[in-house]
Image (tube, rainbow, N blue to C red; front, side):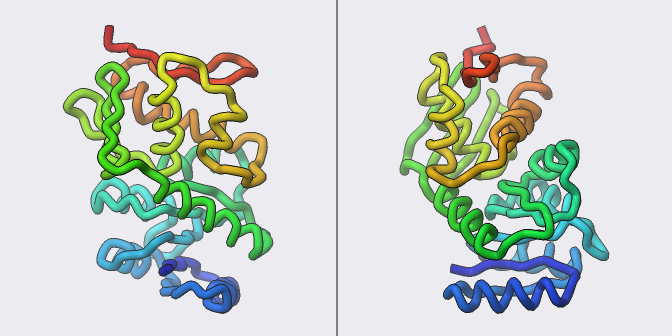
Amino acid sequence: MKILLIEDNPDILKNLSEYFNACGYITDCAEDGLTGLHLAATQDFDLIILDLMLPGIDGITLCRRLRTDAQNQTPIIMLTARDRIEDKLEGFEAGADDYLVKPFDLSELKARLEAVIKRSRNVQDGAILKSGDLILNTRTLELHRGDNPIKVGPTAIKILECLMRASPDLVKKGILEEFVWGDTLLESDVLRVHIHSLRQAIDKPFNLNSLLTVSRVGYRLVDSSK
């Protein structure tokens, strides 16, 4: 298992590298955004741990460029001292799969890393899911709305997969969280933030309302092309 660590604080970078090496992971390190972007775009990693504040290219810009320019879907956990909901939304909308606020416990980061990698690999070979003009290939993780490709991260893909398999029926919040994260303990707003980011990707650009919220219960995906 190979991890890319992109962090400009040398002490934090050293601690992360030593910890994950001791856990049996192979780590590669970058102390600035440009180096991190080059490594992420030219080498294969199982996961990227990305600091938000970086010299050269900040974490948000780096994440967006990986997802859009390089079409790289490697899972990304973003690290930052910012804990506002707006900051989390910006991170998820840029393509991050998880968001951990500093200071954090290394064991929590490891648990989140393992959960993100597990759900990014937990797809069914050859499965094509459709809901109206929304099409998801769970093998290649390719998502389209009609002829338009849509780029989202692995966590959004898992959420969408669960909703598409149940569509147009309601999926309760607890069931959706278990499908995507298993028994991982989540912050209260994690699912809501991911749903908002997913809605921004699959509905807003097309002036559609296919991802619906049933207040205090859950979510449902409907065919909005009719």
